[in-house]
Image (cartoon, rainbow, N blue to C red):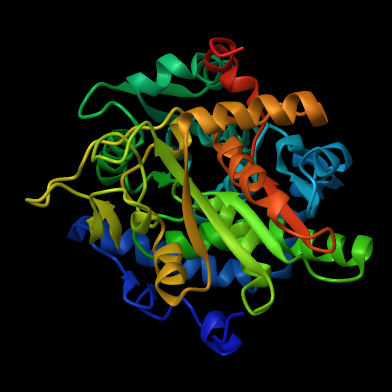
Length: 407
């Protein structure tokens, strides 16, 4: 049980954008002014009932909130042990939790008078959500995506283009999410007066980790209300996958001050423990090499690095978890011991996707399958009186080409 005072957990980030020692703002001088503008506009919007009313209406009528909290009756019986509930973010418009943040930031862009949004994407779900919101709000949209991710997520590339977005392939570096972020930031620096960078996870310079978290808090707030209505008590465990960490922090946030609720973030264990074979930043105690605190793309957090401080290559079967750093709030929660972080291999994620599809009739995104895999590993060891919520952050349509090779 956590002994951390609720006031400590409620007071972050501080005025400098710090979650304990992590976070902050490490950017070139040209981006300081737009980040300060974004911080001011977000503070004003947060205090404006009209902004919240417009966002709530879009979340309800356009995106499909609230999402169900489904009792997984057959999975519970199959595994034995704890009673399992699934938070169905996969049922949202565009197929994942990403639409929550894209709608919020899209409204901020309109509020700032920006006519264009720039985004990065790995698995493609944030890119699709951003393209969708841009179409809905009448904004121009450019999405940067690593060419390796474009190949394994061709369906989402086609969806973005159908929605009117320009999809720009990035062939530099590892050709994945890190490199897409680099190019999106270069675009933003060049076009900062007319464009808003719609960052997709709890990463980057302050105030992005706070803004993205706040737009995803609805996940945990709904789940808390729903589990209390269904079971008349809080859950014992929360499970969510962690790439940058937006879906996990969205679920965890509403329960941070409840010490009886244990939280597990699941990273990509890939295909091996050596550097370059995984994307594990916080579960290093399990033998994965390479993670230590450092600065990447505007924020100070745990980063996978070589011995001489170069950013390491990563691997995951899931494009959305294939990133060398993690959100600063997750780094802080790990240091505090408030959340536990573990890792799941590619093979176990594939097996978990098969299990959920055949037992519950739900095909999960490969990112979400990592959380399901850890749940499958632990649930049988729990007793039948324990309650678990697992966040199903996205559906598996986008991953069918990959999944079909294993079925």
